[in-house]
Figure 1 (cartoon, rainbow, N blue to C red):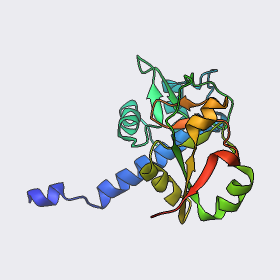
Figure 2: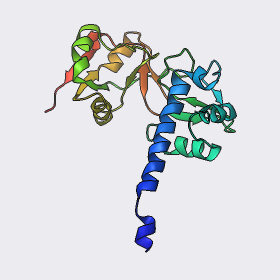
Figure 3: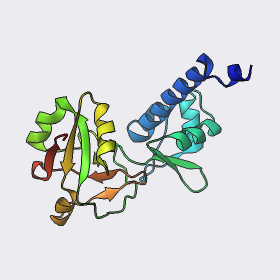
Length: 196
């Protein structure tokens, strides 16, 4: 009988799926469209937690406890609370102009960018551009970039000569969840990483 209680079942699976949907919705609100839930972000991307919960509850189920669990369990570290947990923000990935108070950092020699095969021609012609986001996102290691690339189909990995870029005057920032950010990466600093 104990095995029956502990076995993941349809109910637990539904709860996990609902939590994932709610997390994606929160991500969309805090990065791209706060107005959908009647939210206002301050200049640094912070939203009032009570206002977020009320706004999300118009279409999804959210309690403070569930929000804290979403933030705690998010494997990508997408969100941060302020010190007293009255405010929340997305750590990066915004398409709306906010200053998430990133500190300029010196990057390692090489950073990595994972993408899908369908984007390679454009990248090799124009470099890495932020598109609808404020920054290009770079990974600290090849494995993370490979995981990111798989989200876009057959993965392709680019090495970014980050230290050379930095030495040439391009600023780099490190988000609180370990993602490196820069405004763009010109073609001359990119090399397609061929698997050995």
